[in-house]
Image (cartoon, rainbow, N blue to C red):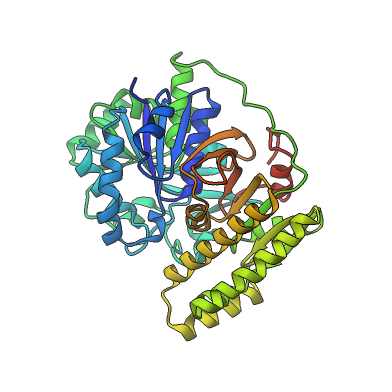
Length: 449
């Protein structure tokens, strides 16, 4: 049986979030870290959702042009009616890094469609789109994207524009149209947009009614709109439509996993949300260990020495019954200022430096898990999660227990020593202040997050 949805994610945290939406709605789903070998693919042959995670958000269009077509081609071969290119719910992208426009052009070549719906909002994650403008929530409130305290100052893809089609116009020449809140439920709006020649259709979504309308538009027109782009808001909208139409029943979310006595975590996020989470963790049984990110702008020997120092410290903490948490930043501050000054002096490309940080943190986590026998982990930071996960030798993830939407505790599968590892991947801006403790406790649904 063919899956209902196949997706390719531009980072690991968002890719896992798509799997979570489907899995917790009662639709078996799996996320691979690359095109799986036949025996691994067969192991998950009953899944109705199949995805592959990439680090495309960190790369330029040339990299995307080389790497995305074979991955999208493999997914297209599964014959799912919806082929989804998954982007971040804060639309992280620029013409030179993680270009969503370039990805849509590639996707439409792999799966020709009259147009590609673009649905970025996910109200359950406090991501809202109204009349083409994206808004995102933080612990301090909801902000228009160009006024967001993190995204407006993002070190790689700062968002100076909240109108997503205006932002996208710098990345592609494909004609576009907006189907806004007033016209989502009017079938004439889609017909008019297609008749105008639009190849990208930006969809508003603010609440359950507009989310359901967006899901219905995509699903009922899947023959013409079989390639889509957007966040996990695509799957939230589809699930709501499938439930409202009776295609699938509503199910209760799974419960928590067992509590772990200790976990290991790494963080490469500079978000103030993550900074608050680190503060909480330091006061609640976690050993905070600062990674000197300046090491990645130096020699390989400098970086290896910093990795050894932190791995030894993390292993010592784990063996003493503590939960080690290695972090390259705690919000904006001296740690980040020192790294940026070192980056300028070195002349290193910021994207390359961020990749090296993620890879270093992944190697530290790998060494810590191997030496301590800890079997639950967290990687915090969207880019960090992708580069860090590559160091663990894991091939597939399945969502196991919920936390906040988009950052579930998962079960990992791989041929190496981390097979069966429980791991959560968290975007930097996501989560409650006690998120690391919540994962240590086994996750589980809450009224507030």
